[in-house]
Image (cartoon, rainbow, N blue to C red; front, side, top):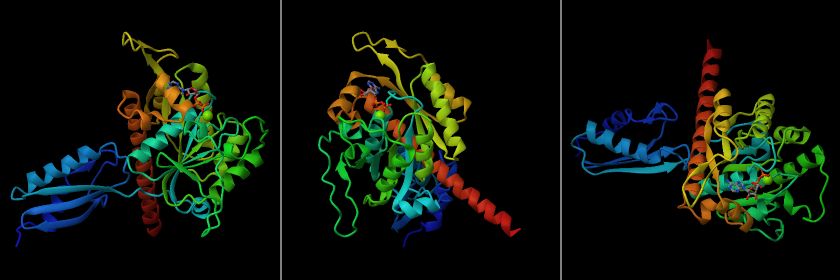
Length: 368
Ligand SMILES: Nc1ncnc2c1ncn2[C@@H]1O[C@H](COP(=O)(O)OP(=O)(O)O)[C@@H](O)[C@H]1O
Ligand SMILES: [Mg+2]
């Protein structure tokens, strides 16, 4: 018989907080599978995303809390698992029922690295163990196939069982692109209804399977087409990519306004081409200026997810279809992007949990 009880363990773990969600792990319902064997203790911590930036800290905090409050505990095993929370939205349940979250990557201006960021964030989330898809909805320059090294159009065949189109798979991602519908040589003039029709079809007719995150690479800008798209896609939220220079920031602000108008939360700002580190001297050059993305985020009370430097390897990764987070994971650049993806995943969890809490408040309020 052990003199340790389940309650002892839960009481100890009530002292461990998820710093992002600002509640203790027991209240958050994250502690599962508590097992006591003599004086040995094991349990699982079910995080809200496999890409949790604080995974290691939470794990060691749990271990320390048990050792502190239950001195007689022997071997303590903390298993880290995850179950991504789902964005519940009527429209999403109808069109993408097995996709938990839909994230738009947007920019006010073209050429700021939106697609580069979208691809690398998607690969980074998948590397952490999330189920991820990417849908290239950029009618002006669908570049996801090139950036993922997909040279042919997919043989789009219908899935026998479900009668749906099977997406391509690479780097652990499911991939569909508007580029598969058009010829590289002949520019297509898209109008809003056509673009949204194609994106609708990509949502409903593609067998995405179960996904934690489906990333949409949107066309740059904030015109009618973009507005139509963000109203067509049942979005959990958006990420805005900008460069530090004023012309790009002005357009990024317009992007923030557009999402605000349609009530889609913006989870954060990514500043791309933030600075350049000269490989020979190590000197830093702020080619497009400094601090613009952070300022924009602070002014609007939005998370600054991070700044990605300019580096030829990032460009080469895009041109050769080998995303840097996959191809050169140990470089500082890849690690910066991996961190950005974890911050984004954390913001999504924070949003979903606070939304759920608000719902409870509202329903409690109604009872009174
Ligand atoms: N941080 C970076 N460092 C170097 N080159 C980059 C970086 N981000 C993007 N690029 C390059 O800049 C060009 C434009 O990027 P892209 O992602 O296609 O922009 P957008 O989708 O916003 O039009 C591409 O050739 C890409 O490889
Ligand atoms: Mg692009």
